[in-house]
Length: 458
Image (cartoon, rainbow, N blue to C red; front, side, top):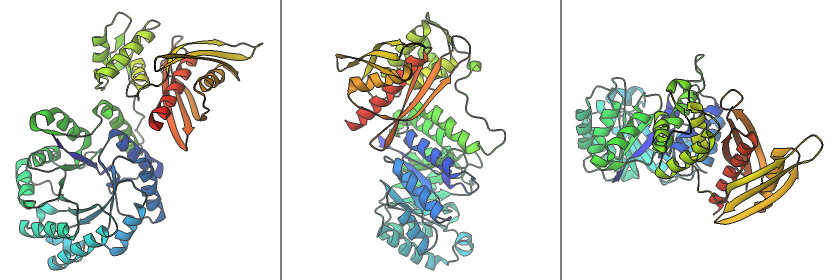
């Protein structure tokens, strides 16, 4: 299988008006999705842009953080400086190669542009091991000149090159043939970026992949190749044509909704993504079997592994004994038990005693590696007593960074969803729990976070 890298350019859109926090959230969700490369624009706002890149670099550990280098030696240095703490830094040298672009954007003649390509790539490569050269308006460039520019970039130290179609005038098969001809003899990986004004960008990209391209530049808003569309094409066609991506398809629908909501939030009509929704038409009870539950999960956009299917069905059976499970309940249920790390500690049972004339106490039984572990403790209320008991059992104390209780559904039989964040070793770990019993939901959320801490430490 050929691995197809997916680079996302959402944060490079010229007309975006995202706040600093929104940019961080988009980058965080892209990392959760397992996008290979997160692209950022050139440093334009000084310290604010540098801080953004450095902050994103603190949590993007698997993917590449790529920053455009601008058109000057100083802007190249700014990009390198901003990336100094990134686990996988990349500097992008983006230059126009069409006659109009060279003349009016870069203010250089063709020969001078070749010289600048050598200088810019060499300067970046001396300070960053991963440099990408991007031919911004490649399809409006004489192909012989394009090949010369790409070759010079590779000789100067570029570890990858990109062919960008900024006009949208080529049909998919013609574009794929153009890319194949332009990069014939190029020994480094090739990426493409296609304008989607005619709705053909995804088709251009997938045909280019079949002609040897190994990376596609996408975005969430569909200005270029739509991320969700292209990832789905790779998933559906990969087995037949021999390619794959590292996108987390199970969570893609959920994450894409969250990114789209952040991207559209400046609109006065934007609303938060629905947590499930009764209009989906999901109404399950204890009589429904595993196939019915998994079919409902797929209707919500989840593509669960066999292991997660078993976890979801087991949790469904527990909740369905007490009430009907609709879309909202199932959505929250999946979020609480699926897509998790292996459980070091699982809840067997608990007993809570509380009242107005006695201190709250909790007796909890956990299972870990086949062993039964028990503890009992008092606290300032039943939830505090439960958390203290868990800490007593595992022999460790964790700082609670955040704790939220939310009602997923309404009515006397409402299902509660609990979110907790524990701090350990300077990092924050979140856990979710769901139950008609809010104390039970809190215990499950606490254990979910603890299991993540233990898993990462191991």
